[in-house]
Length: 423
Image 1 (cartoon, one colour):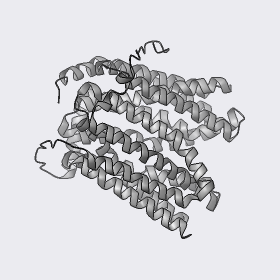
Image 2: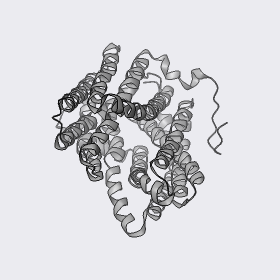
Image 3: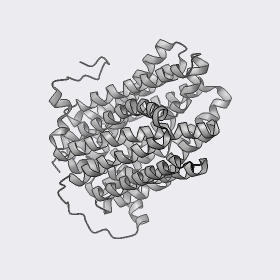
């Protein structure tokens, strides 16, 4: 049984936890992504190191991160409309190919010693645009390769575990490669890694689903999707919860260096220790969610882990002990990953097929586009009341939103029951 009270899970068999691997298409997708994501983390660490080596500016490091994230705020909702119109696999192949081209351009410019910081910013912005367009297609594509509804949460959780494993493996590999061959070859290696996911997508056998003829403009269909998500009470409750958790909860990650250096009196190793604790909790949470057999349990799990996420964050904000901070971050990471992934599972389980792309784009917008805005607010508030009190206050708001969501669980459950028929 899992040690957190109210979150029981039986780890019956290896087969149960990895049951999404029964689907040939999902196996191809998972293995292709496993190579590509490691390559992506190698590129990210190399890009940050290159910018800092060229400039020594922390501000420009933040500018690169902002350039990668901000396109999502403007593009993702419109990409969701396209995800309901176009064949998702073909579009993902195109976006992955474009990302590969960007990696090869970065490699060529760096190896030819023609790279400059403005060029890196432009390349990061282009990557951000590609990612903003790609995300709704990738997330709404998973139900096309997972045909049994009860296995959807398992597939989403395994995707999350893959992302967290890549986050562990990629940066150390990138650090070694930078020392051995330099940043340019790191970009080249990332470009090559995209071939794995492109080949996997091309090898899939997807049953073509009939899509209703789309009438009207993109804006009218965007309004239709927003209206659908707002008037469908279960979707409105879920997206609102994620939006509040993203805006007030996730910005703490940008403030982690302050906790490591000023609160716990540590150095870069302390920051690595805190980041590792958060990642360990996230990875454990991903496998916990993967072990769930019944999607009808997910609404309760979403509520409890939303509270766990906020509670762990509040404890971390007030801690001045290294051991307590690490324990709090493990709790925070576990709650964070299960909370967000279970919400994703619920949204995809109850959304209509012809509107799923638009609904998923709204979900993606809540943490890809809103989180940078929350980080700006957190930084401004921290200037006046300090970082610990800022994070604690934001965590308190997250607890309130989670408790409010707890009163809506019955509505979510009934939506799941109504959509219980196989797709």
